[in-house]
Length: 101
Image (tube, rainbow, N blue to C red):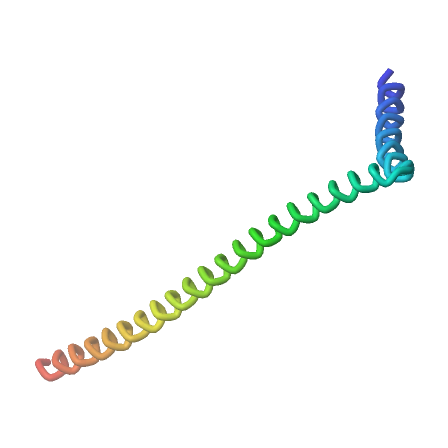
């Protein structure tokens, strides 16, 4: 029964694919062609709108990533400066300690 159900599902899937193809192949009148063209143009417009939104989101993400990278570099530079300053302070304190000793 599982095999039968699987075969029936495969037949339904194949039939649905054939129906869509037959629907496009069976366009016979100008009115049907106009409706099909209108549908396709609507799909094209919605796809272009979606593409535009995705492109805008990508640009915003890239700008955000660039800002974060700049902040990261600034922080790394700041940390390096602080580290150098601390090393100098340690050196000064060691020298003072040596003088005291």
